Length: 172
Image 1 (spheres, rainbow, N blue to C red):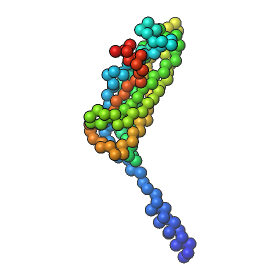
Image 2: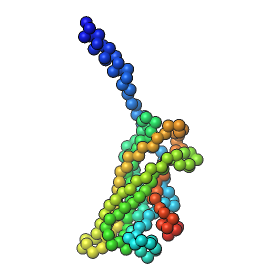
Image 3: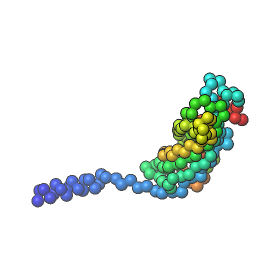
Image 4: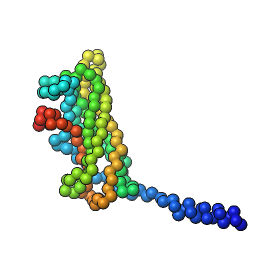
């Protein structure tokens, strides 16, 4: 009898303390490319000029891998992004593309921003003499806290490259 009472109390305590986490599946917010940060350039030289650009990259396409969800006051999504890289004066095959994903409110104010980096390698042509246009795809798990934020159909995601003033000046 005593053993049954202890077992009953233990089960009662465990059932009261375990909290089930429920995920709410939602339509993913619209996603846009930043018009000023959609292109990226890089150079192997210390100073970047129009004449020494190693490669140019463009954010080309995206796809949400699954539906988005809300769990524990966070919006969660898995996002696949396609980058197209065009060699200019590349001497090295290594590519590094720093980019960001921002979560915007209905007034297009940034609520949160996260930074990412994808690396890859420029492909060579058949005779291995020069680099060719290369596609790089990356999949990112994006998790944005949404506590104290009103989520509605006007929230949006924004993708762009991280660009310094020197790169922005050349691109614009």
